Length: 201
Image (cartoon, rainbow, N blue to C red):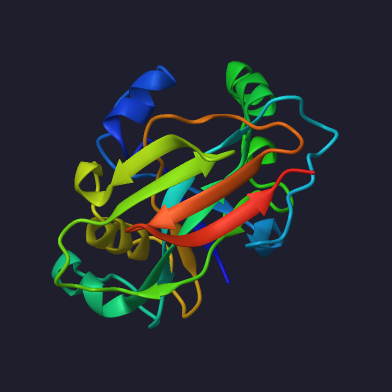
C-alpha cells in the first residue's frame, strides 16, 4: 500500500506558507508506517518542537491502473475520507533551507491520520470538510477550491506510478494549518459527518 500526498493544492494554503503556485501536482509519498487510524491517539515525537496539522480529503484506490485518462479516473475509486498530514514544520524548513529532501519532516511514523471511509456520491459536485481543534473550527475546505481535481490527480499520478487497490491519496490541505500541543483534540468532519478524531498525547 502506497500513500501519495499532494502539496500546494489550494491557492490560499500555498500563499500562507509563501510557496509558489504549482503548474503540476506536487507529489510526495509516505510509508505505510505513517498510517494512524482514527480514533487512536497521536504521540508527539521527541525529534520536533513544531508539529502542524493539515486536514485533507483522502481517496482510496479501488482498482489497479496505469496511464489512466482523466475522464476515466472516477472508475478507480469508490470511497473517500479525511486524513491529517502531520508535518514537523521545523524539520521540514531545516531540510528545505539546505536544499535537501524533506521526507523526514513529513513521512515519520503516524504522520498520516486516516478517518472512516464513506461511499462517494458522484452526483455531488463539491465535497465540503472541516477540522476542529478543541471544538473550534481551524480549517474549512471544499473540493471546488482544489487547483487539481481528484480525477486530475489520479490521472497524473498514474502516468508515473502504478496505482493498486488500497493505495491512498491525500489530496492537499486548505489554509488554516497550525501547530498542535499535548492534550489537543482534533476532529474532522466530511459533509458534516464526523469521520476522524485523534487526541495529542
